[in-house]
Image 1 (cartoon, rainbow, N blue to C red):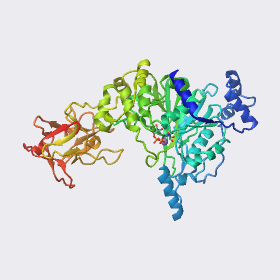
Image 2: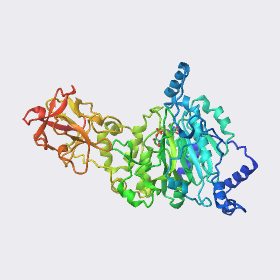
Image 3: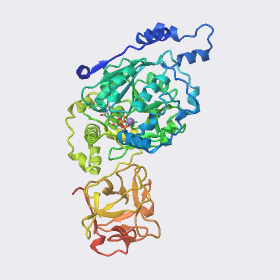
Image 4: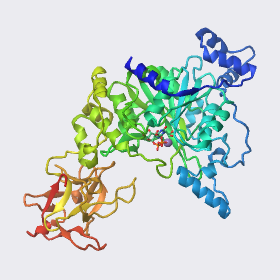
Length: 581
Ligand code: UD2
Ligand code: MN
């Protein structure tokens, strides 16, 4: 009831624009049937017609809402090919400006057809799958957008209409989250008014993606809600697997495989191999990783759904009733971030399951960098931690000093929801859903900044080669900044010095014959060259080389660093952890 009231209140604030589509008589009949689904009538419409082969019947049922116009195979970007334009100086400048503005090369996007086809990038077995169109539930596709470029937004809409079977798609609901760009005003309304099943609704203040999506959900009439970002392209056959799985298991929340569309060339980079699943690190940053063995064993076929501890956030389908039962979203979350982990924890802890269907592929343009300010993400993550993570939230706070101090508002209602639904605790989630995640020990006095008694302003510091790669570089000493992150280390009972703010975790090691520290991936049984004994006197004794770590002002690379030296009682060989400055 409370949920309904919230939805109604928000709805009253928004203006709803609903243009009736212009349809031919045949489509109108179909539309009529879709809007008033009568089981018997629907069954008759999907039944085999006289003289029709089974293949023809299936083809008829698969018919999309909107026929994809034919394009010559040589068309720009057709079949997901990479595009690079030969431009004169003036046009180059325009292209650069478009990237500045959207963090996506929209100058190039504008020159690619809104109706381009994608290459086939699914497992071959997916093509053979037969669906029970008669009985699959219908979906409302909800797409929230904020200041999106014209062509990426419209390509998303056409892509949905051109790949979704008419009998499965109830409507597409676009939610304008208070954009201020001219092309999203009248021009957009005029364009959409010619499209079947497309509705546009506008928020009258900036709601952020959580409340914008809920606004769309509140007017949705389909049994299933399917959320997409506003810069997507759907692969053929993307919708059926999602709906089939939810039809079979109401409490399953199902994500498509998210294929990358390059922001600069619009190349479609999906592949038919095993998709990755979602995780997170202890900064509460979403991560991708390979499907673990135990999950491979559980699955009976390569096209079975894959259970995933978390979702990326933007693309998923859920039964509308189940979504409401689960408490939809935390409406205290602003703008961007955090809602994906919050929802993932909630799904699992409250009895549902989160899955990726390998036969459902959707492309998503990952921008060059964030196109708008995301400074609310921290508070959103803290809300997620406070409501779902129990004592494990401390592990997060140890690694993000700002998080502990961030004002996050009131979460009483979310805690009540958790109690009402009798959700399991976070330990259960870690043990059963995400056992691959290493849980740091964080013993008092053994984590935080690793400091030296001789060079007290300097801390162990590690700068990984890139955001996706942590191994290979050297550990140095750098002026302490007190913010965790690159200066956060943990000493474990297994005698490792772990760099564990990220996933996968790094372990400090010594390459044979060298005197400096190199980062390796941690492994289950710490290899000898990763073992250090942290002694009472503060020395860090490297077992294999029988030497001690000493703070030196100049390593071979010129910066201060901890180096292996013969053990002495010098204060430069005495180390201690400090949790915060
Ligand atoms: C990812 C998700 C995104 C969301 C986010 C975490 C994918 C592919 N994308 O980041 O869906 O879960 O992580 O929060 O999984 N939007 C609004 N109002 C706003 C901000 C955004 O309507 O104030 C819209 C935006 O136009 C887009 C969607 O919300 O359609 C997601 O935003 P994004 O594309 O900037 O997020 P992304 O893909 O970087
Ligand atoms: Mn996005």
